[in-house]
Length: 342
Image (tube, rainbow, N blue to C red):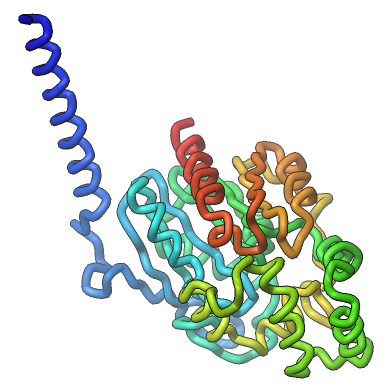
């Protein structure tokens, strides 16, 4: 009886200690002591110097962790931070500090509406300016790029990886020509024949902005390969992000849709496969089975860098953070914590 009583007491003390530890951890995560962004709820406008003047970009901090700071690079180009809002359901309870960020020309950031600023090198320098302004360095800086943000993440790592603690490339391949080939040769033929023929007819004429062309892709391609839900059921953050996209910027760099890259889009010939071995920083590549891009190419990218890991989302499409959410966030969090504990 005496030993039973002692065991119960010890167990009670352990549980109390764990609760106190968790409460302490939560208190630290939400502690705003010394923060200069308290008045704005974590929002910070960061000046970006360009050859066409100085403009401001919008960022918002969530949480507090001096060892883990994740900067989120949205897709598009020209989309918004909003579709990352599902991260709120998973990262705070893990004590991960993260930052929403609208790139120049997107949502809450300034929009100079100047095509000369719509190029990869300038966006890379923008990310570097944001990093410095937010106080991130190789001891805490994780960069997560999704889609076009993955292109930007790869380019940033190739120039500034000495500033990174970890890199996450979500739903992006290292070659746009490969992306286009996969769309044309693998995914396109999966569409109903009459729909594909109508799409090809518009493309043959270069009529990429025709509302009927875009509707065909939106109705038949997106629910299969962008986010695997009926359009009417898309989560509100996704709906808002799509509604607010800077279409001229998107059209100029990506083309009219996620169905490959067409026309004279800036990104059409982008290819960094040969440069992947230069990336030394721990890297996570995330791919979805039903993605707009080949999941095998995303797996190969993880093998191409020096220290890569692949996260496969069997139910996921291009926005696997929504249609294979548990796989996506479990893998992402495990990667971040593993790198942090090294």
